[in-house]
Every structure is written in structure tokens, then in C-alpha cells.
Amino acid sequence: MSIVMIRMSEPQSPAQYDPALLPGILGGLQARAARAGRALRRYHCTCERELLERLERVREDGAEIVLLDPGAYSQAKPALRQALARLEVPYIEVHDDFVGQQEPVIAPRAGPVLAVVNGYGAQSYAEALSIALERIGCAECENDYHVGT
Image (cartoon, rainbow, N blue to C red; front, top):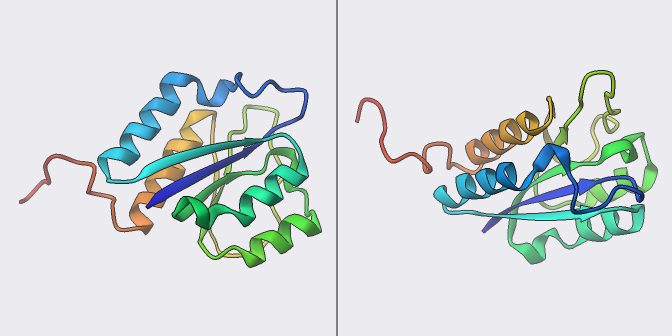
């Protein structure tokens, strides 16, 4: 089983450069998911078609939950709302907003949304992963010890 992370960015942004998820940060998120017995699969989309196709295929990845960063694409796009309505697994909407660059939130009631996480760079992904692990019953799976046990 896996947690699927889908990030939308502008076409002019190179896929390999992602200041919110620099390789060390992404590696830490993947390691944290692995300690909980889950794979963290990451997809980067640069256009609407890619984003909608990826949402249609999350079950192929064995997704239990989706971390979705729609970027600027979140502004009440009917095609996105329809794709989310068909989504068979819950998702967490993630925004890696930096000061002065707040991204719009997807329209309310768009599919099985669990939470909307606004943060500062990688913090939003760390928080979203915590919510995802709790939702799938793995909040404590990644720890080697438990207080009080």
C-alpha cells in the first residue's frame, strides 16, 4: 500500500527544482512513510491533463490516501472538481505557501477531502503526512517505542 503525492506546478518550473521538497526533505518524508510500512510515491504534473490523468490512476499505485498540491490550478476548475468527485480514496489538499504567495484552495466539498494543510514549504508536507499516517492507522507505526508501554 502507498501514499501518493501529486504536485502541480507551472510548466516553466523545471521538475527537478522544487524548493519545498529538496532531495533531503523528500528523502525524509519517504523514510518516514517507509518506517510506517508504506511507500511514498511522488508525481509531478505540469499541465491540467497530467494532473487529471494521475488522479484517475491513483488506484494503480495501491494508494490508500493522496497528498494533493494543486498549486495555482486549484481555483475552482470544474474538471478538477469532477476528478476529485470520482476519487475512490481520501485526499489531503496541501499548499506549500510562502509568505505573500498564498495559493487558492479547491472549492469545498470536492471529493473525499480529509483536510487542507497550508504551511511554509516542507512543513505543509510533513503535517499532511502526519495526518495521512494517522488516518490509515499508522501514526505510531513509525516509532520504535511507545510512551507508557
